[in-house]
Image (tube, rainbow over all chains, first blue to last red):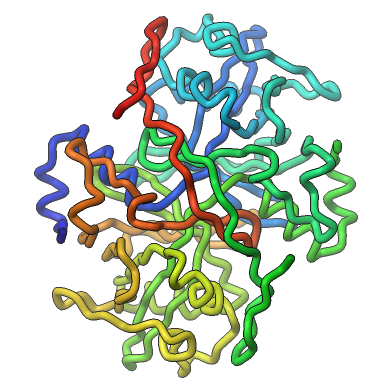
Amino acid sequence: MHITDDNIQQMDQRYRAQLINSLGGFKSLVMLGTQNLQGDTNLAVFSSFFHIGASPALCGVIVRPDNGERHTLNNIIATGSYTINHVHEAIYQQAHQTSASYPAERSEFSATGLTEEWLNGFFAPFVRESRVKLALQFAERVDLQINGTILLIGKIVEAYVPDEVINPDGFIDLEAAGTMTLSGLDSYHHTQKIARLSYAKPDQPLKIIP
Amino acid sequence: MHITDDNIQQMDQRYRAQLINSLGGFKSLVMLGTQNLQGDTNLAVFSSFFHIGASPALCGVIVRPDNGERHTLNNIIATGSYTINHVHEAIYQQAHQTSASYPAERSEFSATGLTEEWLNGFFAPFVRESRVKLALQFAERVDLQINGTILLIGKIVEAYVPDEVINPDGFIDLEAAGTMTLSGLDSYHHTQKIARLSYAKPDQPLKIIP
């Protein structure tokens, strides 16, 4: 099927949202935890979390200010702190439910039955049920004029990872941790590893990393 | 295991790259095809492709100007055109091999055995072997001062998708198309669908979309 720019513009809005959100491939699936200065907590599922650099350890996320994501945005700007929490099969329905439009004074933690966890004095709440959790410090806000979304860049300042999923070379076996991936707006998937491949060099055969 | 900011800074560089690249979760896995004004083609694997908006249909990718990715960057800036090509099991080793440092005059297509495909007069080459392919028009460059990387934003102007993987509501069944996902720097995975979930509303049970 050949889809053109004209086709895309003429699509029904919901159909287009499903289609365009599918085209980029599988996505990171995380819950972003924050707290405002009044002590209200917020938890929101995101699928646009991505790596920007390893040193310093920077990640980005795209935030839409015109919907429920504005609570997350406001809390990060006001407090500078947020957590990233991976999603596994026992909690993926609760992760999805955090995308419902709750009022600011109603925490998605209590609404979905996930548990706030406070670790090492960090200001933002972690999700106790998650197996891989990061503490991030807000680093930079970039307003994308092109469509009014906002790129929030943060620095990873702490990570909590089960010992047994960290390989000797630093690779984290997310599949062993049960971390899931998302496609489109609402499709949740496990993964099945095919192989790790060695660093690629011209005219040298790749090796499989055991 | 609790990893702190100090731990991250003191890690061996390769260990840190593996670890930090793993922490964000599973990633989009695509090959980005370009051509320069002299007619040399380039193909490069990327794992930082992400959705920015559906209307207009915008996607972003983070480019590092200090390595092989500069060919991709220069070609996009000079010509305004690039393609995104999904990766499935029959071509994932070739996709990985495109990350080797080939000189500009040597195309990763011929070096890896993937086939250039020219569709509908678009200036940049597609990968014939890929099953899901997008044509993108360069829209905006954002230099991220924080670490010298560049966010390239593009608009999807055409898409080629097998008929049989498009659901009636616009959702594309990427798993049926064989699209793979990446974790860390070098770990390739299939997916296994758990469920699609209905649009979340406060205090309403989620339904599974058949």
